[in-house]
Amino acid sequence: MALPARLMLSPLPEELEFIALQQTDILVRPHFTMGKIRLLSGSYGPFRATANIELPLWVGKYLKQQGKCALVPPSWLNPDWLEEKLKQEMSKPEEFAPLPFRYAEIAKVFLDIAPEDVPSPERVRSLLKDIREVRQAKTRKGLALVDETELRMTGLGSMEINELRPFLIRAMGVMRVLASVPEVPGTQDNSFAAGESGSRMEEDW
Amino acid sequence: MDNDYWSFESCLSEQQKIPCTLKLEVGNHGNLLGASESDLHVGGKVSIPMWLAPTLILNDWLDFNIPPPFMQRVKRALNADARSVRLSALVGNGGEWYGFGKLVADILEESQAKELQGVLLTTFKERFVDLMDQAQHFGSLPGSAADNMGDRGSDFREGLEMTERELFLLGQESAKAVRLWYESTDRKEH
Image (cartoon, rainbow over all chains, first blue to last red; front, side, top):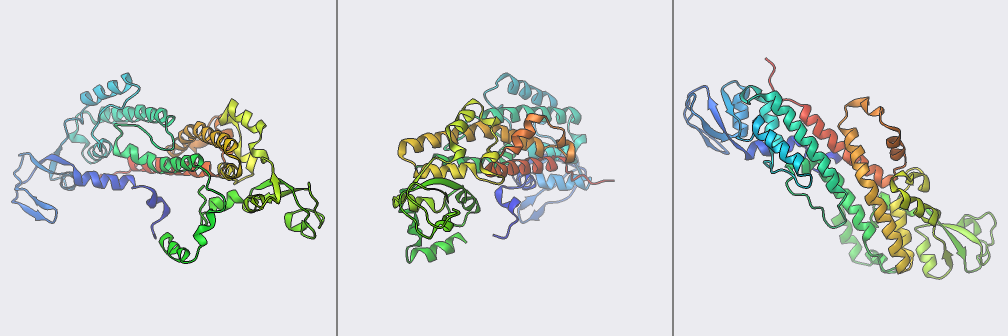
């Protein structure tokens, strides 16, 4: 594989954002009127000024960047809801509060390109940061319980999983090797046996 | 870490030396085994690299002792506080303490092997949460702000052995990627 090493371990945060843009549908309030447009991914429209229309997030982002629409934030992206989740997060040290799987990506897109459409964006931003920190502390506690076969943490978001992934995969691999039963001495050289070695090398490369 | 022929880490673990006692006369081959004289006698002590040891031991030409990085003294220290032991000092810079330990465990008898593997595994588990913590901390700090960390932290980092160092890098890189992503913006400047 000719990919740079850092791309082989896990998707980049940018790639996760891309996936979130594709998968999430949001409400958009266009500032213009236009008929249906047909794209490879589907047809969107017809657009009517000030009438909400459901579109994939990436279309909404594109239109917003052109200044052609306002975005309607999802129901969870407001200070009250997030504050409640933060409380929940603090009061239950053992579990993660249920948040949308791609909350980090979606919130980032909204706060980045459309802060004026989000109610009190600065508070939302700081609440999200607090939530992230509380959850990171929990992740650390959860990691102490990991062993070579499994790790139980439910309710992590995609970005959080992704951040752990390279480290955790490697660490569990190390633990698996350390816990494995020794190979029976004398049988480990079988890979040099005739016929097998050639095909094995091709597979490995 | 794994026993793969192509793995650099396994090469590095295999070049650690294990102290052995001869069980047969070796004439004229002393310098091959790293001794100063050319004839070696029964009971003589030699250090054999780990990749060579299993074959010689299996053929009953050598007896081996537990190598210093896994002796009782070290085990006691690990028991007291695994995080304050400098594993890198035990196997030399860039050495593989875990990999070496696993290789030694593989040639021990079952009960001893189990015990040593237990030590390796608990040590790894006790250290890796701290490791993750520090790696994330370093990844999420911009630039040189990371220099002003507490002393205990820097001692711990210097004591990391090779596998742990790689893990540290992995954790640091992903934390850095996430930080950069949070800082990036697609907002068009008007």
